Structures are given as structure tokens and as C-alpha cells.
Image (tube, rainbow, N blue to C red; front, side):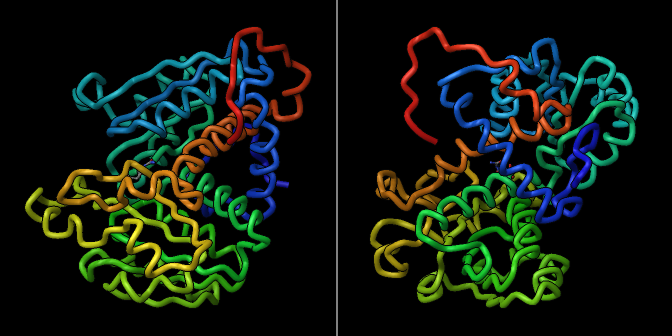
Length: 339
Ligand code: NCD
């Protein structure tokens, strides 16, 4: 059994299949709380330090909301300019101090490996909310959880599936982390579709190959999706490019809409995207005309993110066995039907 209590969650590499299944089992137990069917106050009195030094909507708010749903309080720091990091303070010092004010910390930062450096100074568990183009472990877990659920509803497993990853595979940290999680399963086929300049880094390709999986690498979308069970789209990570002009070269290169989907994919291919999707006209990588398509899983991914983050808080703070003991009823009107 993995020792979660008191541990940092910095990289998917620290997990194995048993640990992943343990996280998913706790995440599943979080469903009635996320749906507001009942409450748990298991983290009443606990404080989350939510430190986001890079733009974020879903990840930051779902970390905070997950903590609130377990009864805890959230202290937010958003943006480098409002923190003493902009005065030259080290990540170590910031961590040493802020960890005295928190029971657990979630952190996002633009530099690769910065969250690991921060964790070295922290006296409480640190959860990586994305470190530059390196990793995004909680997103990868929620993506994998979504894949497992979507495939299960089709009678399929993760082992043996075919995933097509599309877009900016060079700077997209979500595909780096997800690929490594998929290396823990058997017989996964990868089709990696990107402009040549934005190809998946060699170290991730090596991991995929060493796991014995099949890979096709191409810069063409159409004609390469026909076998895909999962189609995972990504945004051009413009903030990691040397200039906007450089990013503009790749924007809108790969687009999915209802027509392209119907022509190129199997009728049950699951459409995923970590979000935000770039909906500006020059990009429009995932068209609104698929919004009500039953195979569009993007909002289910975001909902699953809440469950995964609740599970990680419960596990790292060692209260996963006490959720039910601290339950109470929801007394307000609530109508959330499903996740
Ligand atoms: C992703 C990220 O921040 O890496 N977003 C997210 O956390 N859901 C993907 C992106 O920004 O394109």
C-alpha cells in the first residue's frame, strides 16, 4: 500500500497501479459529497494554502472547492506579482513560511521542477498543480479516471485501448503526465499528432516505448483517428513560446468539429481536452457544434477533477477512512444529478 499520509504529490512517477486504484476508490466515495447529496466535515478546521503563480481557472478553483467540500478553509495566493517571490525570495523560504500557515499546499508555477524545489522547504504535503511544461499529475489522474469510466461504460479497459493525442505535445504538461500513467498499463496504442516542431519530448517517447506500447507519430490529423478509442486534444501553450508570432504559426492547425469527427472517428470515440480550449476564431480547436455530443467528455473531466482532488486531500491528510463518520445532511435545495 502506498503511504499517502504526509506525502507530497509531485509527479506521476511516484505512483503505481495500486496507488492509482486507491486514489480512484476514494474519489468514487466522494461522489455524494460533490453532488451535494450529503456533506462531510472531515477537514473542519484544516487550511489549504492554494498558491497559483500561473493563470488557472479549473485547477485552482477545483482544488479550493474540493477542500471546501471536505469542510476545510482555503487561503489563496494568486500571481507572482502579489507575492514576495517578486522581491527575490526563494521558493524554499516561501515554502518554509507558508507551510506554517497551512495543513496542505496546492501549487502551480511556470518553471519546471519548481514545485519539487518548493516542497523541499515545506513542512506540510505539497500537491503539484502544474510546473511549467513538466508535469500536471492531478490532471493526469483525473484524465485517467475519466478514461477508465468512459471505457467501462463501453465494456472496454485501459489496457488494450488506442489513444490519439493531438496538438502541442511539446509544451503540454497534461499529455506528458498522462502518457507516463498509461505506461503502467498493457498494450496501449498511441497516435501522437502534432506539428513536427511541437512533437512529444523524446524522454516521454522513450518511456512509452520501454513500456512496450505501440506509437505512431504524425503531423496529419485526418486519416489518423479511425482506430482511436480516446481522442485527447490540447491547446497550443502560447505562454511557453518565445513569442506570440511563433505560437500563431501553430494555432488552428488541428481542429475538431462535428463534421471532421463524424468522418474520421469511430462512432464511440471519446473526445477529451484538459481545457481551456482555445475558442478564438484563429484557433477553434474543438468546435461548439460538438457541445451536446454524448461522446464529448470535457466537462465530465472537469467534474471528475473535483473528486480526484478531494481524494488526494483526504489521503495526504490521512482522513480517507473517516469521511462517513463526519457526515451531515444537506439542508438547502440542490439538484445536481450526476458526475
Ligand atoms: C492545462 C494546464 O494548465 O496545463 N489546464 C488545466 O489545468 N486544466 C492545459 C492548458 O492550459 O492548456
